[in-house]
Length: 82
Image (tube, rainbow, N blue to C red; front, side, top):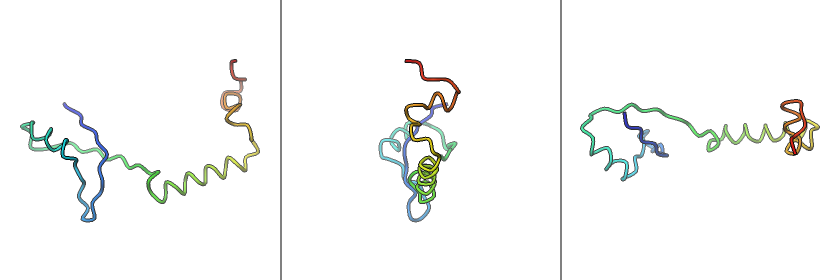
């Protein structure tokens, strides 16, 4: 099985865009069907941005002001190895 990945766009009519280079590659195969897996990039949706903003607000209100410096201690209960 050959796996081809690309970032597509959902067109206004509900179809998916396929870049020209991918179309050309698909033409070289004798297959007449594809297995399609869809992964939605939530960060590019309104809900994704709202979730990110909520995470930031939760972090700001947590009282842990040094999370980036002490993440090992907070996550694993041990100080960062220096």
